[in-house]
Image (cartoon, rainbow, N blue to C red):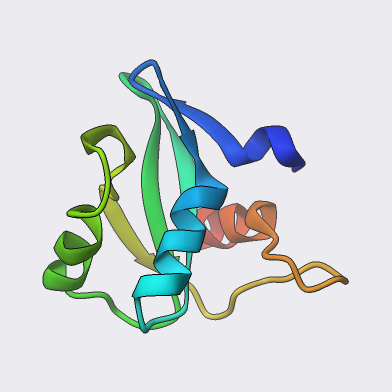
Length: 101
């Protein structure tokens, strides 16, 4: 997954996963990874994978900072946040974790 995979279409709008991840990291206390999973109707759906359970209030608080098409629609738990050799989040590994859980 390269730079192109950081930009996804949601309902015809371009969404930067890098921007959403940066906003999450700067404003929220719980470690998590912003991801986009395929959606038949919208193209992609924005989701978040976290190490700890997220409350609906935490997600709503974050979503208030976003445009409607950028908002998180689902939260999932993952056992760890996979990283590359240089320390970047490995979103493909996160997708794989979600497929197996």
